[in-house]
Picture 1 (cartoon, helix red, strand yellow):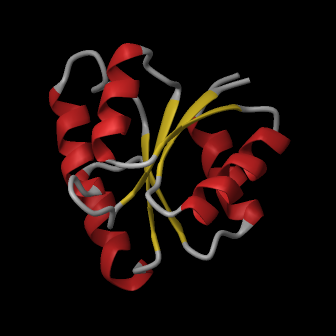
Picture 2: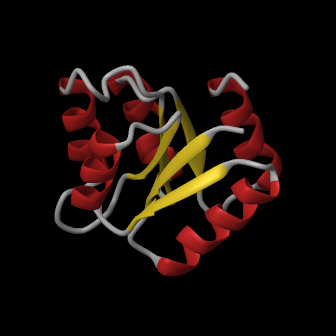
Amino acid sequence: MATILIAEDYDDNRELLRLLLSSANHQVREAKNGWECLDSARQNPPDLIMVDLSMPGLDGWEVFRELKADSLTAHIPCVAVTAHTDRDRARALQSGFSDFVGKPFRTEELLLAVKRLVSE
């Protein structure tokens, strides 16, 4: 069972991700914004972080840069999550994200991405 941190500002998306991931026997932690994500990841590093790219305040791009710049969190695989799939997919992968999941979520795609990135 992997521990997955979800950084998502929209309650319904966070709940859906939590349900999908917990139904696949993963432990899920949640962050409502980029600052919460950074704090949570630094205090107790998860096995994987799923980051919404377009959060207000500290967006997913900035969160990713901060995570990769910190020796405590640099090793954690990060999955970019966004509704802007055409625009953001190539940019996210070129920036170093481990994978990319578009909204609306497709359960099989989401769980395959997680399975590829976490060793159980």
